[in-house]
Amino acid sequence: MKKIVYCTLDTETVGGAAHPTGTYNLSGWIHYGNGEVLATFNYLVAEHFDEIRHDDYAKKNFHLYQKMIDNGEITVVDTEEMALNAIKGVCNHYGVKYVMAYNSSFDFEKTICRELVKEIEFIDIYLMALQSITHLKKYAKFCRENGFRSSSKRSVATTAESVYAFLTGNPNYEEEHTALEDSKIEMQIFLACKKMHKKFTKNCHAWNCKENKCFPKWAE
Image 1 (cartoon, helix red, strand yellow):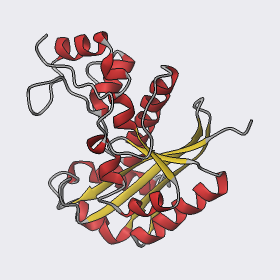
Image 2: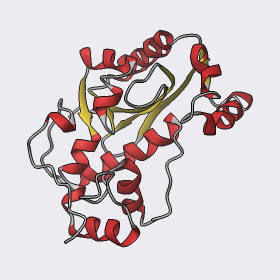
Image 3: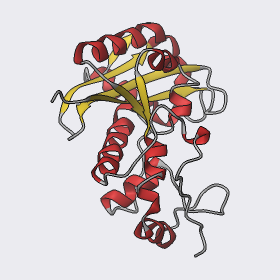
């Protein structure tokens, strides 16, 4: 049987999560369902690079991107479209069946990566986690013990950061918020979900899905 190939990706944008004005970093991992990595990609968009240092959210990582450039660890392209076309090319080359992201409703609706799901099926890793990992009593216990609480204060946190902290047993874990590193932990979350052999919904964003989502309450 032919192995299914996945592409887990992440994006970093300027302008804020609600109204992003440009995507400056697009990165990801091409891999099998057992975690075997076939390829990686890491693109920095030149047309938005100078905006990073002025963006309240992005500027804290400006030095990391400069270091990547200096060390040849990132490919600089002129435009978002060039990055997108390169990602399409690598997905086609490896025969990717699913593109994935944690909180796909952002990456596949509010960034240029929306074009990917016109051609390839997708999986929302956040939804997958809500249908598997967050159902675990020990996940809720871990979050309560370590102060991982949702912004609404009504439930425990269900972010990629809190889920990965649980999986690694490291309550001090903090996301780097560069696309390559963040997509790496998202891939690990997907692999952990997959090992649980729970039913999950494909081609649907978390907020559009009514099935089997679990947001454990903050207070038992």
